[in-house]
Figure 1 (cartoon, rainbow, N blue to C red):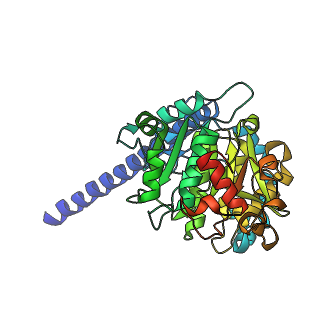
Figure 2: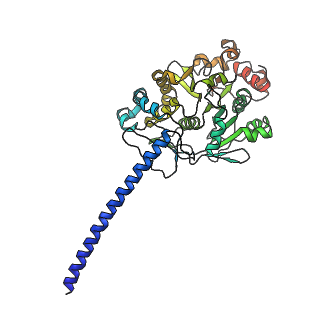
Figure 3: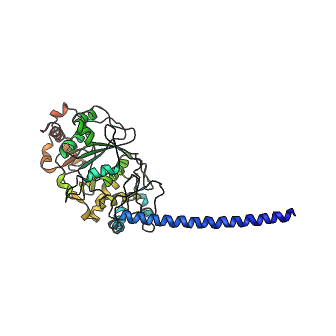
Length: 404
């Protein structure tokens, strides 16, 4: 009798196991269908720029499959020109190939998404006094500065140093040149967690703004330093800053400036172009200063090209790649040949900036909207710069005292 009961029990258990397996399969099919429908809805809404804008992942789209990224964060979409990105993708991959280093042989396997992907959930936006802002709130402020025919917002971005938080003299001059010459509606200062700027020159920046200007014009943005972009590691500080600046301007639009760039004229005439960058050398453009409409197609493509970024190559993605992209997409990128990054860093030209008595070699008053210092100088102070007989001295005096 016990053997009969045991056999019956086993049969019942087998039937239950089979039933559970069928139910599990049906549930998986239902979930997969729901996920596919949700993904299609997200794609259609993102394509028409109707999504709400909490901070999260930029929408991910690949040629073969639409899928929501693994992150559980809500979808965040900027109004990208999806169709232009899709159509331009093959030509972008071809332009990127020569700058992909060890990834060249696997470019088609690695460079899959023609829409930029990055996470903004850890971005914290606040005033110097601690008032918090959402991304959408700051985007709305930036958008309010856009004028007909001038798609670039009057917003400036700096990525502050990750290492020593004490600003140097030239950092102060750079920030003040932006505030007093460019006159941005908002100045966004991006910093790594726990790395707020300090020191006497930071205090000088603060003292050159009124209480209202300080708390209304300045927006501090804390965000993690990127350790990877897409699936590729990023270890060099300069390269990490490169990624941060692309993402900052992609989301908000405006002007990005390295903290060794001196603004010498208002940049308003250049705001009529969707994307503007300066030539550094014959074979490269310089990402130390560029300006863009929010979600501009050229900038979005530049970011997606980082799917095959090579951290060991200096300047490939930041200088040489935008040059190759501009040749492939000249209608999407306006290049200033002399006014932003000349004189350049070469031994022939850098002496025009810092060489004693060499200032006659370049007419910065007539030619330049800005000058990039390239970090090649002995730092000065408020006293020594008054008598510094160089182009650098002249520019500092012009910014600080109103006369060169």
